[in-house]
Amino acid sequence: MRKCVIFDLDGTLTRSEEGIWNSVKYAAEKLGFPEPDAATLRKFIGPLLAYSFREYMGMDDAMADKAVETYRERYNVVGLFENRVFPGIRRLLRTLKQEGWYIAVATGKPQLTSERVIAHFGLDKYIEKIVGPTADRKAEKTELILAALPEAWDEAWMIGDRKFDIEGAIGAGVKSVGVGYGYGSEAELRDAGCTAYCATVQEVIDLLCPGAVPPSGAFLSIEGLDGSGKGTQIRLLTDTIDRFGFELVLSREPGGCPISEKLREIVLDKNNAEMDDITEAILYAAARAQHVRQVIRPAVAAGKVLLCDRFVDSSVAYQGGGRQLGVQKVLDINAPAVDGTMPMATIYLDVDHETSLKRRAAATELDRMELAGDSFHARTEAGYRELIRRDPERFIVVDATRTPEEIGREIAQRVIGRLMEAE
Ligand code: TYD
Image (cartoon, rainbow, N blue to C red; front, side, top):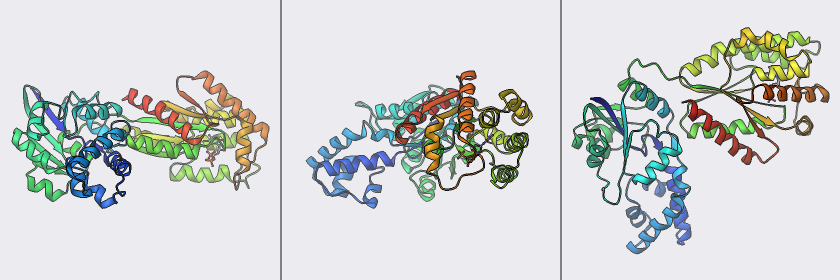
């Protein structure tokens, strides 16, 4: 006998409006209708498509059927992936699984589409059964919930964002949680008679798994020479990580917490021209020691994905290579700072130092490190190459001379792959 939880999909596990709206617009354009405005588009979430095309866009029956067909042309290929997993959902599913719950999905979205969306986001490993309408199963919530339950159970919850989910749960004789972060309102869910109302995913975790230890998150870093395009790639990757429902914490080195930001000011200040190389290496390591303990470790322990703009590899490359202190000395200086905390994956934006120099020349104001001569940057590049040679498993090396979009796509695919593997 098991504790069971059945989830609704749209509005509960994922937020799907982007793909729906883009596909409605596509159908309207192809059939020569004016582009629907935002208010009209919002009405399309929930009801059957043909109904919406008739009611909200003034189509007759035949045209509405044609519109549904045209909509599917786009939706079934790209639209279904223009979707986001709500933040915290991965942590909720991982926690439930860890605590031994049976997890299933009962959704009004067609079975096959639902399976594709769930697999795309790598949530299939948590979900034992997916039940949606098929050629011979209607989109009737009670029926879907009953089909999603295992044969024997002693506690079962339906979790959904609309009154249909709550009514379905009552029909199936299971308890229900109405969630407030989806498409329904608190009043709608309470009026429908939900057993519990949760405004956030965290409240669902606290309700079903009180006191559970959060599954651990992941530590990622991104590296490259100055001018390798890290800023742009961090922005693109932030969106991808978020879209997949990982809870991202962005940080940077040197810096990331108040003490380390103060050390950053000292080490990057171009008035500190007399700074000794050893002083510099120790200051970077000191900033890192505080950051590891105050930010990185707590975030990973709380189940977050911490993405750090530079980490100890920067010290090895810049101080070890660039300043010629040597790899071993820099690793020794950093040993008590890092103390075994290393990224599970490090993205390396691969541009040679000549290209990075040209890109830097276009920048407005250079800091103390960027003012160092060209041979410094050549040695820094060599430092990175040595690190990659020593630890090829950890590094995700990407050719950063292509367009930002191409680079972004490759990073997204490889990083998400690693994060899912590690879950
Ligand atoms: P920053 O403005 O953050 O540069 P970027 O945008 O290129 O990351 O400045 C960080 C500078 O500090 C950068 O030139 C690299 C250097 N650095 C080191 O030399 N050692 C280190 O350990 C770290 C973290 C950075």
